[in-house]
Length: 574
Image (cartoon, rainbow, N blue to C red; front, side):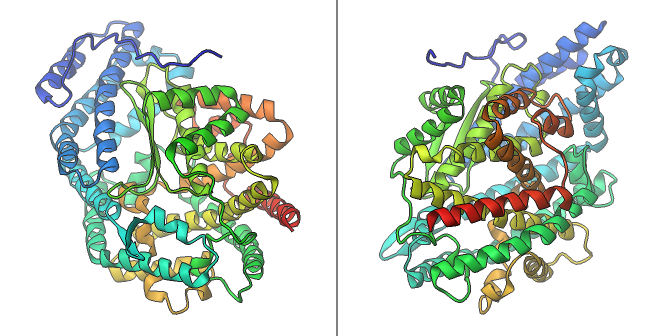
């Protein structure tokens, strides 16, 4: 296969250069679109494409600004540029885009559009126009400022270990070591560092909470949960389905984890697990360290991508050469990982905090899945359709983790491959309980009469006791009460977390199918990715050959498959 390149999208509307930081220039173009006479259905379709081109310029600009702030949280100039764009451009643009949405909804030619192509777009625009309130724009900007402050706080967290300052991702390597006393010491250093910022983080959340509640009130909705569900275009499910997911996890995953925890404790030679006992490899005296540099991580990932489908490896190599990867941990870098599709050039940027452990490779497989999804929709002219619903975006990412895991023996010894597979499947079940906890917690926060800091801490402990093992936190109760601070989504993307649970159920199905028929599964996977956001969520699941269901009925056989795989791997490892 010849070397892959990504040609820039052809400009059909914005043929002259526009400074996206200058509202006067943007306003001229928005005014032209608003004043354009539309006299046929074909002209309406062309008008929608032109709006998408302008919207892509805005989206691409804010993507680059956000990436700069997360790559360098200590760069005050980058932060100010990002926030200035949020303050001066985004509110004006949202007002203008709302006027264009209403122009679309008022057009007599809307009814002549191909319903198969445009039904979902219309549904989204109706929803957005119903939700939009001009008075919410300054509240959104203020919330963004608090969110950015949260990133600065968490991105600047480090600990001093044996005279050396290290980042949290680097410290996580220490939690994989066999010396239990050492693990506990490092774990306590991490949580003690987090606790130093507890008061400011709680204060930030209080401010965000008030802004969110006011936005919902302004929109005429009963609470922020109702607002956010509508904001996320959750047309295929609601609160009842989320609660069904929570209940299914309690009935299927929690009992399974009890068995897994007992096995982990037995292999580690301890009576009970504590919070610092979950990252260590229970099968070997040595942690698996597959790489020590970004180029080596990239090469390992490329090998896996190639095994699943050579096309993915070629796309990944093209991103590497275009310098759209920033993968290694360093001080003053925002925590976590993400893929951000930069709309005006239609290329995905992958951000991560690798430190040398296998889990870092899993993160790259995950974000790679997001990137391949974005590239599969690259030629779609409408920006709204270049991204699927968030739930299916996570199927693309989590699903690729499982596809890649089936080829992990190409980079590891058979013994190492079995160990990392076992660790992954164990973490899958733990993650499901964490997802259910975070989602339950957010449902409670935004529908309770008392969401004070003290009440939040009490409720978090109550919820976690439902999904976890309370005795592992004996003597650490005060620390546990603020563990929800770790989950950035609660601060930066409220209610965006159940998506991971829905996606995990889809990804486990994908893994099951892949073990039976690799070629067909990849074909269905790639086809579903290529649909982008043109189809409702349930139809995207169907296109990938997956069932769209949250309940215990679907969860139970999938959890059983995981337990059987863990049992097989446990016997293989010996």
